[in-house]
Amino acid sequence: MDFPEWVVLAAPPIIFLLLGVILWACLRSSGAIMRLVGKGGIEAISRLMGFLLVCMGVQFIINGVLEIISTWHP
Image (cartoon, rainbow, N blue to C red; front, side, top):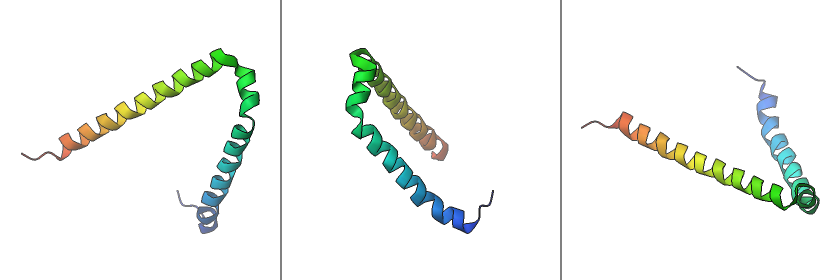
């Protein structure tokens, strides 16, 4: 799929700025978010993020092992 050159040049800075604004807003309102979800919600989110991090690590290891196996020439 070919995009016009102006889209390819304009999209990354726009996305970067948009993500920056979203992250700034989340961090700025973190106190309100913590009050909204409560202690149990924070613990659940923390466990979910930990699980996702472990899944990503395992996937990196699997991809590395598969790459080593596919390029192995004894």
